[in-house]
Length: 195
Image (cartoon, rainbow, N blue to C red; front, top):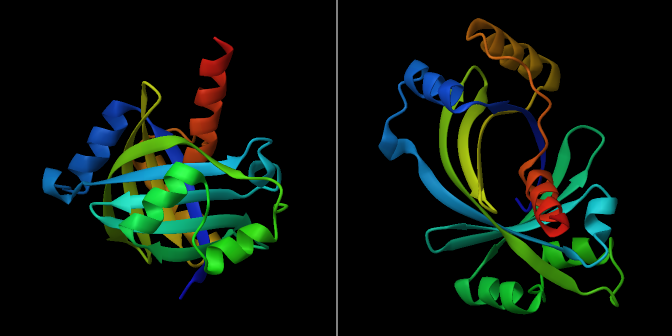
C-alpha cells in the first residue's frame, strides 16, 4: 500500500537511558541496522510551513521516498520505492520520479518552486514488537550532532499512549518534548548557519 496513517510517540533519551533500554529489552548489537534519511524542501520551506516533510530513506541498496502530511489522527504517509538511479537523480537535481509521492507533493507546492536536497541524517535503529506496537530505539548522527530517541508506533492512539507512558514511568525515564528528526535536523542546520 502506498499510503498509511502513522501514529507514534517519541521521547528523547540520554545515552545512559538508551543503554538501559538496550539491556532491558535484551537488544543485541546485530539487531541495530543503519539507515540514512535524505531531506528535501523548497528554498522557502513550503513543505515545512504546511506541516509536511519529504525524505528518501536509504537502507543498504534499498530506497523509499516518503511524504508525511498532517492527518486527522497521526500523519498520512505516502510511500514509493525508488531504484538507486531514481534516488541519485532526486538527490542531485531535486527532481522527483513520477509516481504517487510526486503527485502528492505537487498538490502542496507550485511547479515554479523547485525542490532542494538539504542534507542527510544517519540513524542506527533497532525495532522490537512490544504490547500491540513497535518499539524503536534510534541513535542518530547529523551535522556534528548525535542524539538518542525512543519511538513507539501503534494503531490505537489512546492505548499506545498508555503503554508508552507506563514504560517510561517504570524505567524512570522523564517525558521530554521531542521534535521529529527532520525538525531536529533543520533546527541544527539553521543554528549552524547562524553561527
